[in-house]
Image 1 (spheres, rainbow, N blue to C red):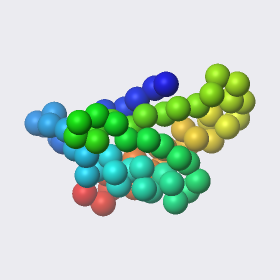
Image 2: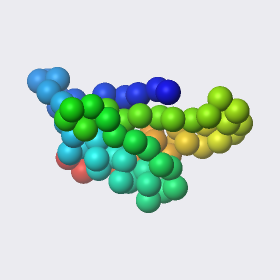
Image 3: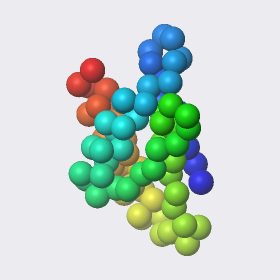
Image 4: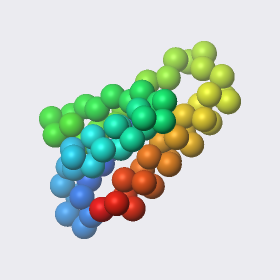
Length: 74
């Protein structure tokens, strides 16, 4: 498991709203992610150890795109 913590600019306060938006955007593109943490601001990436590198790369591209789109709309 890997995880990404989403925080507000400059304050480093948990940003569960933005994490939720990233997860929703990624889901629309076909990538299932899980939120975690008391503020729901942690995005967990749960890929099996047997996942082919091509699928990992595709998932990371979707995640990157989802983050860019959410951040651009803030």
